[in-house]
Image 1: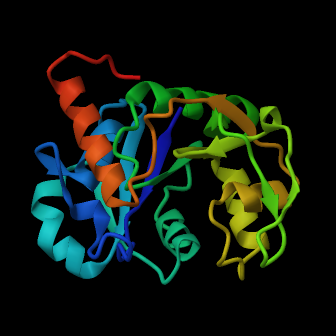
Image 2: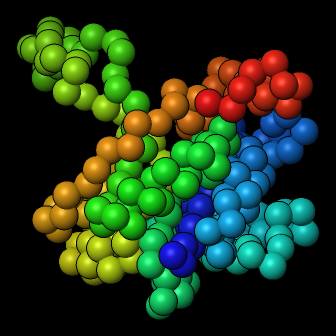
Length: 229
């Protein structure tokens, strides 16, 4: 099985005040941890890092390697995914798309989603929602519904696809720029996407509190007092 990964890391970090993917985290940067996880999986032949040119100039020496290629990011996440996908080799069988700010992803999660995508065509890691959900459809903030939480899962990355499945979805919806993940386009194209149960630790770092939590978990992993989940 030939696998390539696209790591999207072109965000400006509005909520953090600076690009979160290059913030220091347990001795590395946020993006380095994500990249390291993919490079630890032998099945992943190449990792395409999609980021801004100034980030490449500043960080390429530390992040670069024989299995790493840098590509310029787009104006939106979906535009960046498209830019990264253009560089995926034609003979690649499975493409993994990952958020660079999910630094606690593990090789086991990556491998499980890749294998499911190879078998079923499209797979997304996710965790079942634990909190009670409330639907609010008005400006007055009145609750209109309380859906059964057992039906809801919070999607994560890497989202993995057979190359032809993702290619079709990106081709059929070229103007789709507001989608928050590519599985929306894959579903819209008529393909079924299978959930792969994941770990709550595979969260996306978006706020200062997330950074503190990630730092603590990584340090526990490093000193061996917490197994990698």
